[in-house]
Length: 210
Ligand SMILES: [Zn+2]
Ligand SMILES: [Zn+2]
Image 1 (spheres, rainbow, N blue to C red):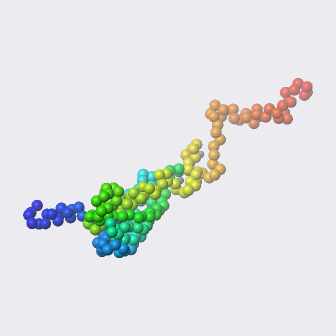
Image 2: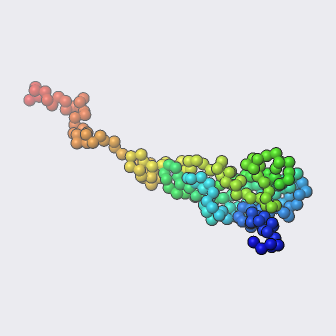
């Protein structure tokens, strides 16, 4: 490391967030005067898969941000909606399906020197870092709360036939199985005759018939 090449600012720069990274918003232009507001609409691309095991925002998905950034005394308040496509696997029929998820954000990002910053832990209130807001952890947290743990392809998914595993949506509502115990299967062909004990031909065995 050559001396005088600005090594102090360089090490700082190494931790600096890339302002045009998908969910990182540069809020420098907002200023610090409380009440100053800025609307922000942008399409961000998810660099990673975000969500749960069975359903998530896929990697590379286009996420719509429709946000309002507001300077408040303790930091920047971010409110608005985030709309993201989701891809999941139905927990009943196991088929892949796609959907979308809307998130409503109300999140304070504290200024580094604010009382909020000094009286809270990092995991309680988000921080502004280098005049940027990183929405990714907020979105991940919200998705964890909003996405279903047992996602369904349709609200009334009929699932799989418990007998043969066919998808009921394909098999139709009249799909079913006659449950036959294999020990009785060989006797099944005699069933119609032997079952009617009170039938009209019960008298056939009477000796006085002839
Ligand atoms: Zn399903
Ligand atoms: Zn079946």
